[in-house]
Length: 112
Length: 115
Image 1 (cartoon, each protein chain N blue to C red):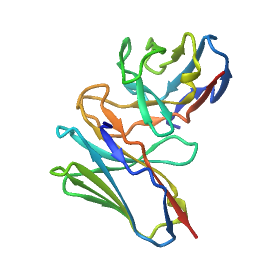
Image 2: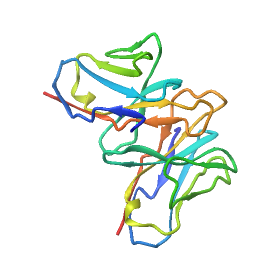
Image 3: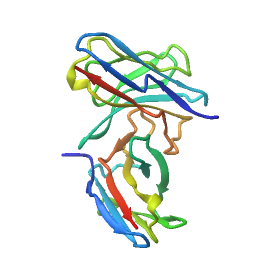
């Protein structure tokens, strides 16, 4: 069983739409959570951290549900430039070198 | 400019021919790591290093070696490449002073094909 699971998509949405991705993790002791963005044929880059109380950064909102062991990413007013793969990342073993586990990614395609 | 630099970016080689993928970072980061990315499997960690002369296996270390003789460099060595090592490889680094903020800085990737 994968430790961090995501729906691979693709999610095809029109510009201006609101889209949400979920990610589930299996290790209940996981400490911290992040969303990374990866453009086609590029390296992943940190999009935002996910805090217990939920957090927002412009059109992006991240939420954590520890009881159900999932995190979510909501994108409002989608832009063409939001087209990318979004990677859910979990810090399962704090203070250890194998600290991050990546989900397989969810591909988003925003259409005109 | 803060960056992680990998070379080569693209390489086609044949089974058994030793190769090295170099990785260098200019951010004075303690932590460095190598990942491979394959369709449907996501990013998987190969090896990591917490500091100079400190390296350890990740999830998929078989067939790979690394070294960390200097803080800025973390080369990945394939002693005898095989076709199942055909993949997209990423080097990453992070400042790690006992607390991880979540930001890994990745190189641009090295696409390796082993025939």
